[in-house]
Each structure stands twice: as structure tokens, then as C-alpha cells.
Image 1 (spheres, rainbow, N blue to C red):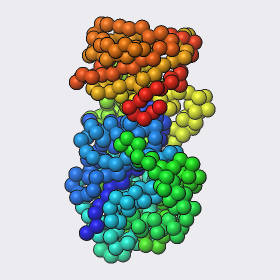
Image 2 (cartoon, one colour):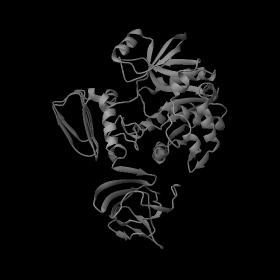
Image 3 (cartoon, rainbow, N blue to C red):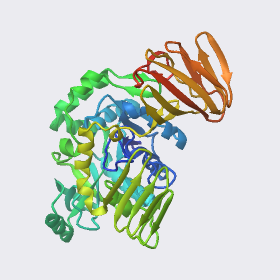
Image 4 (tube, helix red, strand yellow):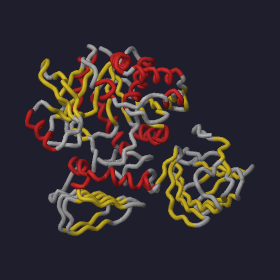
Amino acid sequence: MSPLLPVILAGGSGTRLWPLSRKHYAKQYLQLDGKHTMLQNTLSRLQGLSHLPPMLICNEDSRFLAAEQVRQLGVSASILLEPAGRNTAPALAMGALEAQAMADDPVLLVMPADHKIHDNEAFSRAVEMGRALAEGGELVTFGILPAHAETGYGYIHATAHKGAALKVKAFVEKPDAPTAAEYLVSGDYYWNSGVFMLRASSYLSALRQHRPDILHACETAYQGRMADLDFLRFAKDAFLACPADSIDYAVMERASNITMLPLDAGWSDIGSWAALWAASAKDSTENCEIGDVVSLEGRGNYINAQSRLVAAVGCEDMVIVETKDAVFVAPKSGMAHMEALVARLKAANRPEIAFHRDVYRPWGSYDKVDEGARYLVKRITVKPGGKLSVQKHFHRAEHWVVVRGTAKVTKGDEVFELSENQSIYLPLGVVHALENTGETPLELIEVQTGDYLAEDDIERLEDRYGRT
């Protein structure tokens, strides 16, 4: 039996769950269902299967966030970096090329990192069925028996073939409401889960036949691969020359050897706030309340308070989401307007569309507490063993005050320790560094002063994370 290699596609940066999901902190890295993130839940879903260490494909900006979440889960995974987003077909091509170098033509289990599956045992059973088909050269996809006439999903038209396996007749776009109702009645249409099983060679062969331009660009990019710390990078210019396309459009809608297996495992793509409400645990009034929430006389609401009290009275079928820098309020029926809202925020160059106030770095994170003319205040958390780069600034001075833990500080030619309630002033232009050599998180307040306080006012002289 061929080895099974899970390939997790984590390159998306969707904002359909704004203000929680943002360009630089996408849905797959959020804790939306329990104590683990969507990515961690996807990795945990593999526990019932015999498989090689999974392969994670993500974008460069999220590499340290992805690596930290893998580390927290205590699993081993290879991480491949896309130089830029080119949709799922090129991403899987890079994964398939690397898979052939790692093992003898493994069967790839391709999964989005940001979907919810309630029944992991049912998922494992379906995967084992698909594995035998994929070993024989079939391109296997998994379809979800629709529970209602959904207009937000693509569909797979499939009919009886062999046993549980169905022959795919067509992939169809998101339908309008009357068409979705017809699909539901017919019984021959399934929601497209975006989960696939196929041999690495089968996928590359299909690309060679149907999209040789994608395969050529990816092969060129793969030839220029290089290891970077725990990541694998590819030749940037070659990958940027690759056309963008999805696995569905590039291969699945064109190939003839497509088989579908029905998947009944409580699947949801969590593609909107309404979908998240439907997939979440609710109380007797059908409310899902997360965080510090007090509600009265309400029903059918999704209320998520991230940083402060949210009080609601008389709300029904509403979505209320609060973060440190934004509040989102809409009826669950108004999710179709989310794209227009995000577009307006982008057009206004609002930073809230891309960043949270909490910004994550390989050494820890920081929160912008306050800012004004010529000053910026941050609360910095450095994880045990973390170290900020050896750096200097051309436009700002900094003042650090330690509030928890012990800091190892470099200031010019001096190296010394600061403990709680101790502080240090770093004049403009002085070379400095900060490190947590302890076993608990280091927390400090940083006050920046100067005429230019943007993040790009940094000259890194040395960096253990390869960011120089």
C-alpha cells in the first residue's frame, strides 16, 4: 500500500469572517471551535489514520504563525512557502513535486486548513475508502449530501458507479436559489467539500495534460527551491509567472478519471458568520455567546466579545463581533453584503482589514496600546527563548519598562539584564536587542518617540529568524 501524505492548504487570506479573520491573520489561525485553531483541528483530524508527517503549504507572511501553531500541537510537519498567492492548483503542484522527492509517489490527502468536520471517525473511514481508489489512479473528491438548498457552495453532479463510489458528471458553480432547490430535490447533487485524494503522479500527469503552463512554471520554481530554517522556499520569479487557478478549474472539471465519495461527517466550510453560527454550540435560545457577553430577550444570535463586555437586548438572528479595534453588527441574513463591506474598507485603506491590534512575530507578539503625534505605545510579549533582531532605528528612540519576567538587553556594546519595574532608554541610532532567556513569557511596555514610527524604520543587523 502506498504511503498516505496529508497536504494541508493554508494559503488563504479570506475576510468573510472579518473582523476576526484578516489578511495577515486568516480564518485558519483562529480559535473558532474550542481551544484549538482551525489549522490545529485539521491536523488533529489525522490521528485516526496511518500517514507520513503532513505537509503544510502557506504564504510567507504567515510562516511563523503556522509553525508556532504546529509546534503547540506537538506534531511534526514540513512547511512549504508560496512566494505569492496563485490559488490552489499551483500550491498543490508544488506539494506534489516535493512529495515525489520525499516518498515513492504517495497518495495525497488534500485538505483546506479552515474547514470544520464534526465526526473524525466518519472522515477517517471515507479516507480509507478513497485511498484504494486513488492508488489505482483515480482522482477522488468528496461530496457532501446537501442538508438544504445552499447558494453559497459549488456543487458536484454525480451518479451511481461502483458501490459507494459515484461517477462525477460535472462540477457546477454556486447556483441561484431556485436551482439550488432543484439540486436538493434531485438527490444527484452534492456540496463540493474541497477535499481530494490522488497520487502525486496522477495530479502532475493531469496538469501536464490540461494545464501544462501551470506545471511548467511550478517545475521551474521547484528547481530553485532552498531550505530556510524550518521552511522550504521556491524560486520567486518563476512562481510569480505561474497562472492562478483552482484545483477544480485546472484539473477536476477537465479530467475523465474523477470519482466522488459521499462524506457524511458534519462538514462545514465556515464560510460566513451565519455558517459559523450554524456549526457552533448554542444555548436553549439558539444563541452562541463567546467571551464577556450579557444578552436579554434575544434569540438566534452569534455574539463574540474578544476584549470587553458586549451587552445586547432584544436582538434576533444577529451577528455581533467585537475586537480591540473594530465592532461588526449585521443580521445573519445580510452576509451577502460582506464582500461589499470589505471592498469599501480596502478602498479606504483601513489597516483593520489587514492587521489586528495584536501583531504576531516569530519571537512573540505586540499590541499597539496607544499612539499619537510623535509617540507610540506597545505592550510587547516575548516567548521563552525568543529574541528580537539586533537592530537600530533612524527616526525613533525607545523606552522599555519590564512588567513581567527578566529581559536580556543589548545596548551598543553593553549586555545586561532587566527585571520587573526596571527600565532602559535606547537613543535614536543605537544598536540594540531584546531576548527572553527565561522559562516564562517576558512582558514589557515600549514607548517610541520620533518623527516617523512605522514598522519599516528598522535596520536588522542580525536575526535568528532569517529576516535580515
